Amino acid sequence: MKLLQRLALAGWLALLTGSIAPVAAEVDSDNAYTPFNAQELKNLFRIDHMVDKVTLLIARPYGSASVIVVTPDGSKWYASRHPENVRWVDGMTGDIITVEKPLPGPYQLLGTLSPGSTIERVSALSVELDPLPQPLYQGERVKVTARFLGDDKLIRMPGLEYMIEWRARFTSLRNADEQNYVAGTFPIGSYADNGEILDEVPDDGIFTADLNLKQDWGSYTFSVTAENKVFERQINMPVYLSEAPVKLEVVKPQDASVTPWKLKVTVDDTQVVPSQTVVSLEQMGPGSAPAPMLLDQLIGGENDIDLSVSEYGGYRISGSIASTTVGGREILLSMDDVFFNNPAPPPPPPDPRLLAEQAAKEAALAEAARQKQLMTWVIIANLVLLLMGGIAIIIWRKRQTLKTAMAAAQQRVAVEKTMVPENQRDDADNLDLDDLDLALPDTDAN
Image (cartoon, rainbow, N blue to C red):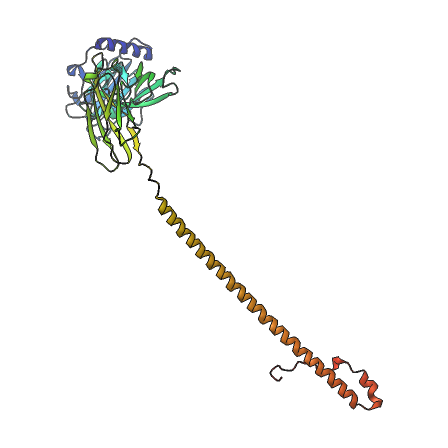
């Protein structure tokens, strides 16, 4: 089976490169390029006249400077300055240098190489990729690997993963009856050789995928690209992402005081073996510690599990599913979190007597406010009336005083007329009231 997979991958590579790639043989640790299997004399090596293309793999101590290549004609190449037929990747732990149509003759490297390392020279770089398993399920955690090959041999170099960029993508085939119809193209992860997550050993030349398969189900093209400044390889393969064979749903009771909340676990026994299906869950509620649940006695179809829901508020159920497919493949699925809310019951209606007392209190307060407002208007009206009465009295007293002064003036004029001689009365008759002093006497004088 593995040989057939490698033959298929070699066919993909031939289509991508436009040439027939040699079929890779079984790769083991004795048939791999590694910087610890030979010693070059004074960093010297030779390229003969039959080589059209060569790639140099050079291991250096971590953080050391890139090497300098001295060619047969005495010129020097640097990572930052070299001819157009040279492509150079300089990493923290090594260099990858590809030369198109190299000048035949002896070459020398100037720089610090890792102790006991060798200068590897390969003609062809390729990528070997494990295909994704089928059937493949939503949320499944899969361990698939990729290898970077030189002349069909595994390349091992410390820090190699920092010198190669891996990208994994899904592209929807846009089938109208599938959930991923409008998904398009999107990244789902990468490959790494760092001894973390699913990768077993760092820097062993085997890159392990970390893929996010919590995607819409349907038909995809799975694409993996490995590239740097020296080369680029891409492998495409069709894949179908199936619906999760185990589904979880929370069922709310009609009356939580009579029947409990239920967790409905549906197991598709056409896809997985129910007796070999284990659901490991953790329920988290408001203000309570996480409560673990292990469901290992499942049957095909629906399984109803009672939930402990005693507090009001929001809940979350998270976990994973381990099972065996009907084809015998062990699978581990990471399920989406399930959220639900246990609402508090509405408060009971208030006592009618309390309502009546409250209404009476509110009416009394309203009446008191009305009386207070009315008293305020009465006081304001009285003040206005008092002010207007005072003004009227002042005006009346002024008018009475004016009348008295006018009468006294008229009487004085009459008296003065009687005292004037008869021959002067004509002038006295011309006397006008304007000539008289009509100043009002002081009220206090009266």
